[in-house]
Image (cartoon, rainbow, N blue to C red; front, side):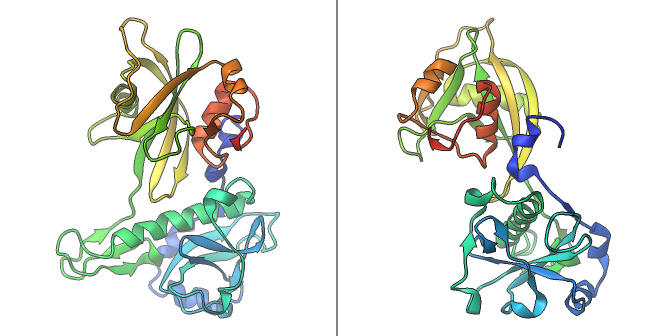
Length: 309
């Protein structure tokens, strides 16, 4: 990544060749399990096995308990990781951690900024595809249990033969500024009352990203915006979103009244940079793993630490 904003998106980093053509091989996992170079990333209850507080543990095939599900993630392209370039990596979903239960496990939310480019990429990939599997165990056409195929990247309806492919839900997230270059932040109904973030929402069918920006901001705040400018994107596998970051300006041609929707958003506040700086210890901002953090930082003009800052 060369763009300064993109470099702030920890979950958009990657050092893996997804090796998509290998997914077509019928005996792919037999080949991988026979290859002593293959390394396995164990996933248990949404967490990954760690070798250190900032590194994933990639184990030989024989060192893991029996897996509930396997997904071929691809081959490492990292020149700085312990495993050599070209190492095949497989994510396995464990129903029982077995002898690994007492080992250290970590969540992507907590570790996203401290993992290496390769580790951040493969853990984001693994959680995204495994979360998709969890919600597509049955065919939407016939209700029959689907079969996992193509290296874990397809599920097939055994009755109709229909292939079901992984999906990602597009969501926009917006830094809204007014004529005084103040930033609009809102507090969600599901959060603590002192936690504030940007406005966001899912893109609806038949809607452009830019139209979604205008609609979501109005629905949640009563503010009309114009000129959405795309900044960058970051996968957010909690469970299956792709966050598309924008900046937008209040439309000066329209009279708008700042009005929380009362359902998702309970409070809204405009912040100048000075006001945001003075709120340290008073409000909580999004964690540094999120694209919201990166957008706020882009507007603010300097790094912002996590949490109560």
